[in-house]
Each structure stands twice: as C-alpha cells, then as structure tokens.
Amino acid sequence: MKLSILMPVYNEEERIADALKQALAVEYPCEIELVVVDDGSRDGTGEILGRADDARLRVITHQRNAGKGAAIRSAVANAEGEYMVILDADLEYDPQDIPTLLAPVLDGRATVVYGNRTFGSHSAYSFWYVMGNKGVTMAANVLFNSYIGDLETCFKLMPVALYRSLDIRSRGFGMEAEVTGKLLRRRIRPYEVPISYRARGREEGKKITWRDGVEAIWILGRERTRRRPGGAAAS
Image (cartoon, rainbow, N blue to C red; front, side, top):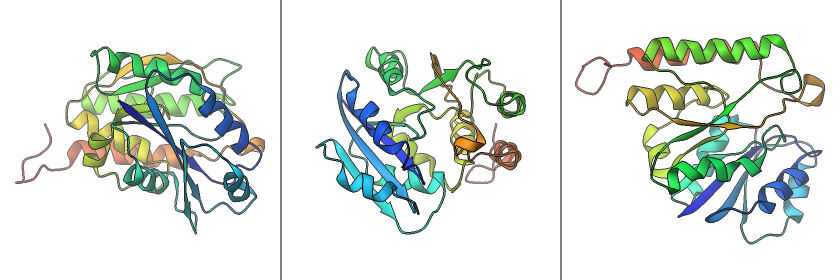
C-alpha cells in the first residue's frame, strides 16, 4: 500500500521547513508520498518549498489563495497512493501519529480512520474553540445518529478513491464537515484512534473562526436533508 500525505500550506514560512522535516522523518509501515499544495502564499513559503529536496515530496502551487478545501482537492487530484491522510503544516498535529492511524487499516479492522484529539489546558488555546469543536461534533452525531468524537480533526485517513467519490465542494474549512457528513450519510462510521495535539493561538497564525463553526453546522444539515438521486430523501 502507498499512502499519500496531503499538506495544504498558506503563509507558513516559519513552520513549513519543520513540518516537512517532521513528516518525512517518520518510519512509516508502508511507502509514502508527501503532496504539498502552496495555496497562494504571499510570504517566503514558496521559496522554502522550492529548496526542499526529497524524492517523496511533490509541490503544487496555486497562484491565488483558494482555501483548505480547494488545496486538498488539488492534492487529491494529484495523489498517487491508494490511501490518503491530511496533515496541516502548522505543527499542531504530530506526524508520528500517522502509523497509529494506519494500523487498523493494515490489519483489516477499518477503511476510514479519524484521529481523535483529547483537549487539555496545554493543547487548546481557548475554551470557546473547544466548545465550538464539541458543538459541531455533537450536531453531526444528532443529525446522523452517530457517536464520533472529533469531527474537525485534520487526521482523516481513507482510500483516495473514496475521497474522490465524495466530490467535496467546500473551498475552506467547511470541507471537514462536508467530508464527515457525506461519510455518515453513506453509513460509513470512522474508526477513531487517540492522537496528540497542540493548538496554536491567533498570534501564531490560527486561522479558523466561529464563522467556520456556523458554516460547518449548516453543511451538516444540508448533507442530512439532501435528496438522493431519483428524489428519495437521505435516510
């Protein structure tokens, strides 16, 4: 099996070199490629990526910023692996956890695996951020009668073909809710494993806001009520 690690990047010149180094230093249990999408960065991110030298690394460049969902769409279109996982470049997630996500797939227990974050005082930059995350996750659980623990996690591992079939259209952070809503609508329940996490603050470049939470709930509602082809409502 080959795993495509997809890294959307926007204005991360202070972190991108470390993000690449950490991702490529992991001892993975399978072949990997790292597909980085520079989503219209206006700082020195592009120059740093241009100097990176590793046969497993491929860089795609957007001339203008289009959002995380659009960056992942480009990465998925160019992915050559059978499986994929998203890894942000902000150093909040530890790529050393990726083999843990792979384990249930490699031993046949799961097809889709989510990394479930445990928030603590050292891992969450604000009370409202955590409550917002829990609120969006609870909305998904109520709407789809499921019990997932962390909808907004970046670590979503699944077959590339499955992700392509979901036809994710959200261009920004709403893609997280759209992916989960469409999986749950198909009755695909992610297998969850615990992962480490350290949130950065606004002063460090945190981009997600409360508006993204409102959009996520709207997207979940849309996916729950969207009609199937032929006019039948979602069950």
